[in-house]
Image: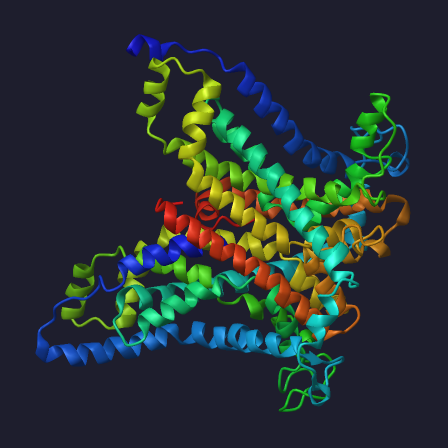
Length: 322
Length: 294
């Protein structure tokens, strides 16, 4: 969701002020007043909502991250400055390592898998018959709930599940996908990539379709093979879509933890699948440490915000519609 | 040149790659479906069997019984429908104001709504939850929001509240409504139509396609919501929706066939979304392209 901010602002600023019309000056002020009243009325429900569920909570979150508080009694909140931050951001804290490291590794693995996979599929899919069917297949997980996805893969990863069944049939020993601390995080990252590949295929297919066919014809006349065409034409011209997919997937990967709750329950084995957003969730709702949890949320938010700004900058510079 | 373009080679490599990928995409769903029909002694044993050998419907009846699917289903429907309708109405109204009405502060408000889309949901999880617990005059709370036992979180309304308005929805509607011709609105204004009539009779009918897209995204997203709903419902099974109930009630079902029953529940909970997706694929796909979600 965050990813679309860039294109949104660009379009929006170019459209501002387009609705100005010249009305006869006599009736203008009355009309403006009428429109103004209607405008505020139409916006009132939404603005009230944002005040209660967005503006107020945002300031509350910042304040909480600077306080010490447990339970629900508002009179017990104690302001302690940056202590929560210094507690989680030092070299002895588990929040930096392994949790924040896990978060980055999880995001990186799922993004690389999803982008590489969707690029391959998007490149191949548009030459095939029954494109609708193929796209439907890849898109299925996008509409499934995380509970469905997580439980099915958890089942498939079990010693008696589908994947180890296949491995055993090939005379390979069973792998403890979710029980081996070294393998658990990549195992979940694969599922995250699997679940998000459909949306990426869609966006990349649209990107490939919008590339001018004559460029390919010219390349063919020059005798380029399909590999050269892919590296020399498709990839560079697809850059805006690729950047968009890449950044939105990174942002999603950094904050996703529903899959980890469903598949591992507690971020185990031994913290190996614990990520920042999940640790925040546990600190808050398992241990009631509102302050520590809020500071963790802020740190993760700052990381995601910086990535969003990078996307804004990249897509502004490329100037293309992504 | 034309002759060269007509030369059609069957792209075997592409077929193979997309098909292998397709199998990887489909297998989990097939495993889920087949496991839901496996008999008592068939799950969790070696060697693994893909197809159920002792085909049974009993997992489905057990799911209705032990997971109380009926009640979960009702909660899911109520929450999803209320949220979807609310998002559609508020987005259309706000979108219209931002696209077609001129008043002071409009552009600032629009920029603010764009900015709201930059806030990731996890950031508001804790404060929103605390606001619910301390909501004044609900669930035993006094006017200052103190003293109660759970406040708003004891009420199903708390599942819907944080989702009733969508910044993305407003943005989507506004971008679409900008393209409604001003001449049409001016003509109606000269005929004496009020702003509400303009909105309801002229702009809204034209916004139907974008409304369907927004409605679908909202419906599917809300139907599948896990984090917020599980947070509220974890201590109150009366408020559980389908995904949350299927996840959190697992420890209460027959331990010998937990997974087959869970799979049966998941199959049932996926059906409504799948039907909607099949019928409105075009609109849903457009929505995902616009938002890049998930």
